[in-house]
Image (tube, rainbow, N blue to C red):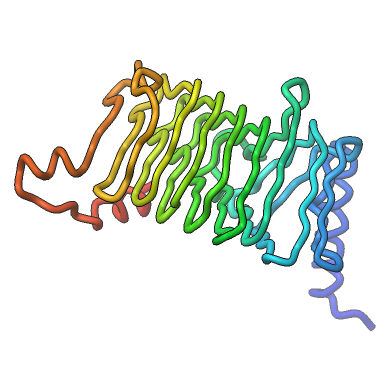
Length: 240
């Protein structure tokens, strides 16, 4: 005899899968033998929780794939990453519910370069690059709290990228970001450079942001003889 509680949970799970099937959305596939493949013909996918790819795992995604993110969803890449959409059919990561955020996409590939082309990232709390290097080409960060946060990132290249409607579009805590033919406009804050961050590129690419285009922690605090209070950032994140 199957306990009633277990039967109820099974029914809830089956109903959830049925609702996804009816709406045309597929659950994000689990890692099998260290691989995940996302196919355009089976898009959109729904990711409800976090997924972490180890350095030995393989992630492949076809152009035109959309992944809809639940409130607790995040994707973390610890190894080599290639996401290649096309201009006509970009890969899209956005929230399942446009009124809520998800946890974002994170690159912690260490000494392995990432290579991202024709990607759209929307409605995330924070997208980050930590102790990694690589390139974003034709990538759009839109309506995120932190569009892209770089920390201890020795070299990140942004080419033909766009940041819009983010709270903090691009933040560099430590490392170097190089920007070519990109646009950081229509955000609350455009570019924020902490004392360990370096910007390479034409600053005219950062313009028309509502509160500030470019802020440099080193310049601001040097004038005041102060150091940054990291608790402020933690308070912002907790309150979000």
